[in-house]
Length: 429
Ligand code: HAM
Image (tube, protein in one colour):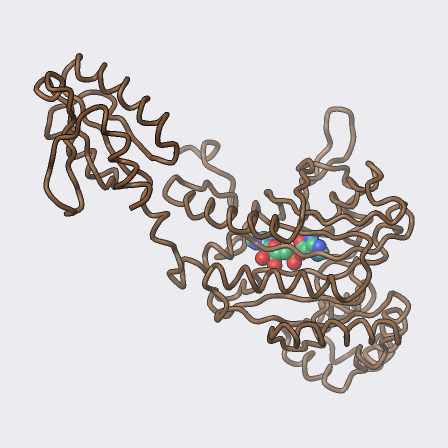
């Protein structure tokens, strides 16, 4: 196929075979967030480039290398959103819905765009479900966010495959003091640092902590620890969070090297990781960002949130074969009609049935066809039952009801009794 007619590398179609699992996943998360009192917000996919530079940080990988930025016809620099937090903060500020300390517990879903090297679990267009909470500054809400994701993993049947990693970055003052100490320590050992870390030492030194280079990792063993620089407020906050996770029985691992790739975090940061997906193992990540709203021109307003990667969680469900049986079947009943009169009667009958049995997934044969071909289509649809309507049935005002998956014999059902019969067999059964 000519190149221009292919999808862009790293941007995937989600085919009809896959959408039932996506809808199940999205529906499960949406239901859970409803239950915890979170409300959905929808932001545009494109924002002014400046928004992401100011919030995510000029010297992060995302802003330096990964954004889809372009000039529109007005000459404005716009960017396809690489994440949702920045736009959510922009939206709450613009509409004044966090003013006067108003609490907001929000969630969003949608595509995000980052020009990364595509591989399993890492795409250029990917989807997140994110949650952001404003104006609640205690560890109780940090804990709630983790508790609700833990419940979600339970509902999805993937709890045993994910692990919670936790750290505290402290307030920005504490982090500043720590940054100075780290820079001093590493500057004295500059020759031993890998090239990338040498560059980061000038731009974003904390990111050196999550280096993958073994020699740099070894060097860091003796480096000052972030924990030792935590201020009292951050320490108490972190203790409060850990106590709540203990009370809720949620296991976690403290990871002092967890610093995250976006600059806006303070205090709590966390990641849910799995070892079942290879290199792209973080399925959900987030933390607190108490300074971000003010940094973007708002009144001091605390924030905390997370985002989960839908593709990665779908991959995990598939890998662990945690796919509910109910979503495998898309059709309950398939109606075959033979001849014009039967087709007309079939149309009227199926609409009557749909009126009376709203949850029923009834597919009506389209495009005619012989008995054999319609039957083949009925079977292929995955339906539990075929309904058969020909001249003989029409004359008797009955429809043939044939189980396709070995649940009993074929029988005739009167038109008037069909809805009730289907409701009993399919919707309740
Ligand atoms: P993030 O860690 O950049 O955080 O992304 C969150 C999640 O999105 C990741 O853990 C991963 O599951 C998924 N993800 C990220 N990049 C890709 C990719 N290229 N392909 C597939 N999945 C990906 C944020 O975006 C923050 N806004 C989270 C947050 C919300 N923090 C506070 N509030």
